[in-house]
Amino acid sequence: EFLNETLQKPTRHFWIGLSVPEAGTGWTWVNGSRLDRDRLQLDLGERPGTCGTLKGTNITADNCDLQLEWICQREATKL
Image (tube, rainbow, N blue to C red; front, side):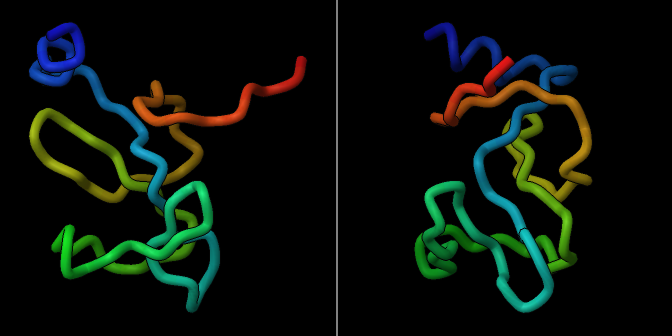
């Protein structure tokens, strides 16, 4: 319920663990697996350095340098 309410706020944008790490790799999940285009049909282009962002009900491609929250599992950053 909390996640649904949070995702509906138009000002809240989240990383979903999807990126194009370098040229020729295509969209890749943080665990290293490739995006299955049969299961999730997205037209985001494949520009290196872009990451998948959830904005409301849409997935868009944004610069990976943006500071956004995550909604997927990610290893902790060592301080």
